[in-house]
Length: 182
Image (cartoon, rainbow, N blue to C red; front, side, top):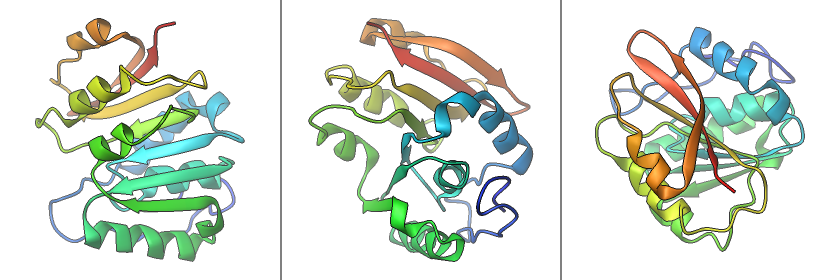
């Protein structure tokens, strides 16, 4: 896995051994950031279920002003910290070792420009995050992106006050782009 563009372009990133994480492939990451082009520069980025930190690091490399990485696994948080040091992006980053639902529940309000989440598939963790976010005040016009299994159902979003604004489908997974209705 590597950084595709920006200040840390072409730098290799460490990944976590085993099947606990699924690093996003370069091709899918490139497609994702093509869609996010107008959102990244000077943004506050939140990477939930951050894994090895590849998506948040890509955002920082492409000009995000800050990124908060939220990851529960001690191995993964260590990997994120090592990747941030290697890419020299650690000054703009905060790494929080906790579960994503608790982190979001602890926010007074949501002041991130972009929230990216790539939870373990099939466990409804993204739904738990949205249930908490539904009751939060959004300071910014936040774009929420979820990486999910191709067959994951998001029909519940409307009842929580969110709407899907775009969908990118791949072979076995997809990116859903979501905004909170005003």
